[in-house]
Image (cartoon, rainbow, N blue to C red; front, top):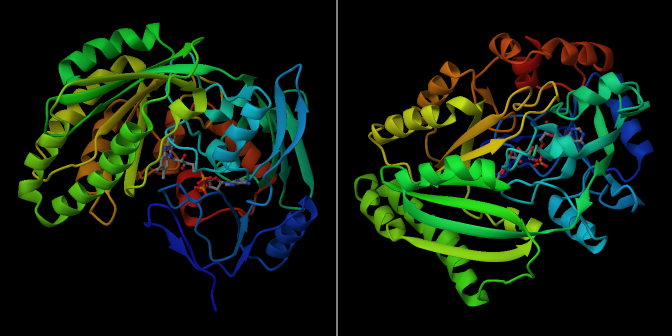
Length: 432
Ligand SMILES: Cc1cc2nc3c(=O)[nH]c(=O)nc-3n(C[C@H](O)[C@H](O)[C@H](O)COP(=O)(O)OP(=O)(O)OC[C@H]3O[C@@H](n4cnc5c(N)ncnc54)[C@H](O)[C@@H]3O)c2cc1C
């Protein structure tokens, strides 16, 4: 019987010839050598939370989920070395028990660490960066079955590119992270008129640590989320109210609305408006990772673009107009975040303070013309797509968006000239 693999969004699947879950670095090296010898593609997979076809392969799929422990801790330098397949949810708890944390995280914690860094997974905050920026060392099994160690002081040119490398350079087996001392965040979430949200957002991105907003399509309602470091003790929300809001309304109720919208698109609008039309503000304090990450049980497909920060709100307004004119209800809020510039060659935030705009549709509903319209807007702002989310770009146009594209190409030429770790998607975005 063939193996089968499907991603979280249920929009990518494959039947790899072999689906391996190795336990040791040697086993990984043997699988890579086997693939190369048999001229089979070799592909690392994390938690399958990418929407783009990054993982599917008919060759050998290597799942690193058994590489899930912390192997070294340097408490003075606040550094840890971990197995590359560790899930962020596990990592966050293990770091907390050491009095440590990652400085910034995205919306969820289900991804593997290697998968998250490979696509530049990010949260929000102009003085912060993607998770890849916290990486200070990598151990990679390369195409010849050898082990490449890289960091700022060892194989530096490869280290720079490998932090966001889409699984194209080899199988990452170990990752060293620069952490920070564990901290609390005060979360303030305010649902109000979108124009208020936009005014508050412009100030808050400079005055608070982590700011983002959501706009509910076809309405004048938005939610601003502002998270800032706090010395206060945790003040958890009433567990009953939290369950009601996060599970029953945000997940269960939202799923029902999406199902309803699928069958009765013309009536869905009213239901949605009723759901989100009231003003509200909540505030609480909790350990950072519990504020950054929440549960997303309603499955969707997503596209996200990074544009230069200066154009963020202009681009958002264009997306807003296009969404309102679409002639079909969009049930998922549009998410807007910001990030500081970094120097990782394939990071969408390379060399520029960035604003991110993310659009979603309910699973099993068409992504176009919605995503295509939004992508066309993003192109006019030199937008760079999130590697793990849907987009239609090719290496031809992406190369001009990344000033250090050639640095990455040199690493690719050196570590995988014959494309053993490639897939049709990688050929499209990195090679053709
Ligand atoms: C519900 C949901 C919420 C999300 N929220 C955010 C968010 O807030 N911010 C954001 O930026 N993104 C977000 N994403 C996107 C997600 O973080 C990325 O797509 C991420 O790459 C998924 O990690 P994964 O472990 O599932 O990796 P996979 O999707 O399994 O793999 C991603 C890439 O990593 C490579 N890879 C995996 N393991 C290895 C390894 N050991 N060695 C080499 N390469 C490897 C794979 O080959 C592939 O190219 C979200 C996705 C979902 C489904």
